[in-house]
Length: 282
Length: 252
Image (cartoon, rainbow over all chains, first blue to last red):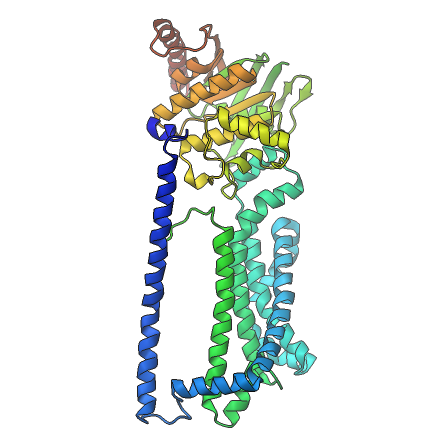
């Protein structure tokens, strides 16, 4: 231990650097193999699917072939139909998420930081939370019609609770021992928030963000399938009426891709802002 | 600048019964003293330190540092906890600066000097998870010293470390004390540590926590653990310590 304490001074530095380089290299190749092994199953499924379709074992109304789906997608992209609808859906999702997620973050912080507001607000909010938010959609349509408002508000409702609950939890998980340190060092309220509470709550807040984005996306689909005149959900609904199953598949794939992209974005933020964390990584 | 501790009584509530932790404590320390407080576990020595720090104000009595009565924690009373208590999301230099602006050149200079003093060069940008226990505790010491406290309070700071690291950090602490002449109050359960570091050893007895003896240690610095006079002084302190311990064991 005397020796490892001596490491604190300079001599062993180059070794340390070399060590880091080699582990980062290993990590990269590990990530590549994980990416490849993750691809095996989908590729096998697509090949089987194409074979079954090509052999004519299922009708194209039930299950169009992957090739047919690609062609449908190509046509939708070239005609611009896909992007017009995607844009409308994204605008709804973004607005709903900003309203709901923003409120969740704000109220979660408020309730987390003061026990008086917790007593006042949390019981009611927890009660509302137990209602599946999609069950409120008929009410929203009655109140706000089938226009944009009801859709955006439904998305906002979905996005609200995950961020509210996790922000609240995150703030309450701040270590009381570190809080004592902030008192001894005479932190101002602002510094306490910036150096202690926000960083300590960040892992939970980011988890809430991911769950909120997922809920917003789910609410969007439901809202659009309930009745709309534009958007990816409408495109799918319209295609179903004309039995264009391939377009329905294109819609599903678009939802999957955008959902995965937003999730990866938050994961990326997590990785870069939480690199101080010392947790089990498998 | 004197530190005057007058505690009539300090009690905790445990299972709805009041348990007396500290009873009738009168201590006066001089500026520049290195006080070590030793006692069996549960004698309330950590509680005493928390009271001096202003972290615990629920007691009868008063603590006066200089001419100010202690009412709450503040930066002129540096506190080193048993664990390092670093902010895991800040690097070593950010942890030392904490709420002070590292961008300011004067502060930057001070932080660099302290990193030199606690021998952490090359680890300025490391996160706490990359440090050993001893290194983390040195960061915590640097963090307290940056505030230039009038008194540095240490609550069994090296208790969780292995023997070699502990001896190394004891020497680091003596160097800092000789250089800055900051008043130190260190709580420990290790007789050797109390004699090696202290200019005065406060021996406490338990149930309830009381001051048994205050023994001045006249040995010059740097001290040698293997030195015969050191051993004699150590045995002298140990004898007092054991006597009190036996006494309280019989009493309890």
